Amino acid sequence: MTDKIALVTGAARGIGLATTNTLIAQGWRVAMVDRDVDTLRDAAAPLNAASAFVHDVSDPDQVSEMITAVTRSFGRIDAVVNNAGVADFGPIEQADFARWRTVMQTNLDGVFLVSQAAIPALRETKGALVNIASISGLRASTLRVAYGTSKAAVIHLTKQQAAELGEYGIRANCVCPGPVRTKLAMAVHTQDIIDAYHDAIPLNRYGSETEIAEVIAFLCSDKASYVTGQVIAADGGFESTGVGLPSLRS
Image (tube, rainbow, N blue to C red; front, side):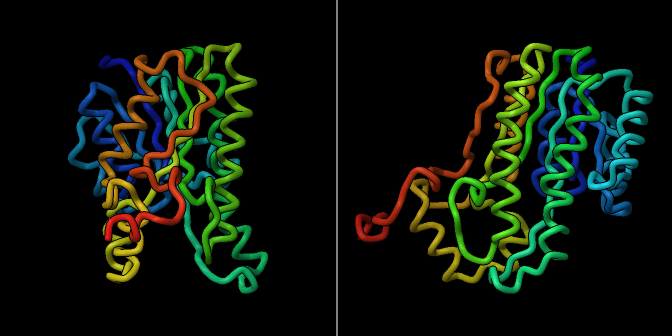
């Protein structure tokens, strides 16, 4: 599978970097896209099977330039992982329009722009789109009106892509990570928050970036050749349950 090329946005850190490493381990070459110049170049430097492309996915002109650069460099695109995203948490009444648009421009507009620009290349390879949403797009929570709404829109956009692009052999699927043990999450989650998540998750723990990446890599691969239009919550069962776990465990 050495000729398979994946384009991963938001690849400088977190789930994007874990996905890059997982795909490389499975024989892919990866175009790593991020707007954080220094972090992206540091992440890509030790990876022989990856190249860094500094672009902002919320800018239509930069997206067009990115697709041109990637196809010129690699010759093809077999999978696109739309992972780039931003989060802005706060009370709904404090979510002014500027904050709303900042989230939407990357989380939703970016997915639309990158996917649309990649369609000609993906038609050539009968490739795959994998959009990264969130558990927050499947169930509401506090302090994330823009973030949750953007991710819910990504879920529907994925289904729309599957419906319209299937005739070209392009598959489109969506992964919704639940709580993931990232450095950022562990820095801001208090012990009370950690305990609350554990009590609400049937597997009783946070996920890892690599666990999410394995799901993404599967959906990119030929092993998922008859899977399209699907929304997979990689969340330890969080979305499937309501209240009750703490009481049952005690």
